[in-house]
Image (cartoon, rainbow, N blue to C red):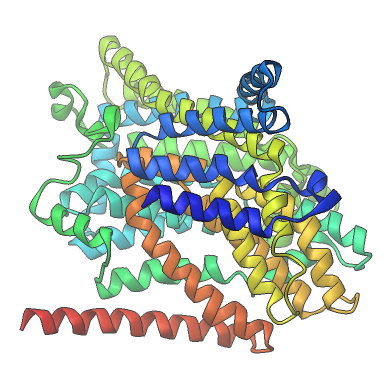
Length: 558
């Protein structure tokens, strides 16, 4: 089946490939082979590292071999390209700053676990968490509250809530879904987050290019009403928790968790049973919640303060800004230029506080602390390697112009009413195939938005606004559920869930929400229906779907 799917995709891409000189700008049909190969192999083999490695090698060869298939030099250059992709990844300053965030944050989590800090938080939360629904609701609410950054969200919420969800027999797959569904979708919507600067920067450039006469922030706020996938995903999380209905592979995982301890048969490697990996003596130590709240609170406070200073917050304050103003914080964070570096410093600060709390509110011995460092660094290694390979595959896709090719075969072939839904579809496919939301935004905002502007008769109209929302939302779809997305990888690891099990169980949910966004929201809105009514229609259809599931279950029980 996988071979047939692979062949059909390649044949379709070859049939729809742009002809003539456009290929030099849009890429060739085989540019889709590396990401499609990576995704299919990952689903088939459940070995993400192997799948990514094969896809990168295939991509490197495709950059050179098709031009001279019988040339030994072409094959040599193809293998050389593979090394260049990996080298460019590990020498990128931004990538290194993101990788530097992983070891201290994982070590911090291990120290908090060993000192009993998470246990204290769990005891405190258990006063309000009384069952499976409330455990899931608490997880989702924490995900919404950690809106400042998707990486921080995934690590903190996944690590902290895992013992609680395990206790109430919520599957690791469900935990990973809740963490993932409230990371990128929340960070992408938040007007105060580490995403806002990037999104607004791209929108500012396109506004200047098209001479729209509005700021990038104005475009971002105009598009907020049309961010249907993100809004519906948040609604879906709470609706399905309240109604208590699962379907597809997730239902199987949840049914299994009700009879078996979550993670008992997990293939999550070194992360399996991580919260219980502390020495037996630790269980007898004090488990005050303050040991966890101070490091985690310090990490978030340092992060926000660092963004405030780096973004010129004090100067804006002297110029009349207000700390209570949302616009003030939006402008400050958008002006920050070292967001990843600040995140690294925040992780080190949180680690330092965790060490201090482990000594001030109880004493962890040096052998225990040493083991925490070893376990934390060990836990960081697999995401290290996966992220490097995922970024290398992105470099490969950039070289082959995969995103440009996917854009070219759809953009410009539809009417104004169909264009925003088509943009959402193209952005979703591109982000899923490449595993990058930022890359998808960078490709489609400069290419699709001018087309939408032209369809609006060179005015800033409805088609343009919906298309902006469709690009941003479609980009987040892939970031949310692609097996080669860094956020998906971090969510699975922080929840001690096998990556491919996480992808397999959450994909039907993501596809359902994407389908609702496309059919019940983007299509009606592009035809003139108010976005609020479109959103309400999609939620109504969602509720009817869950009611139908409930009736079907009752009918079967009879």
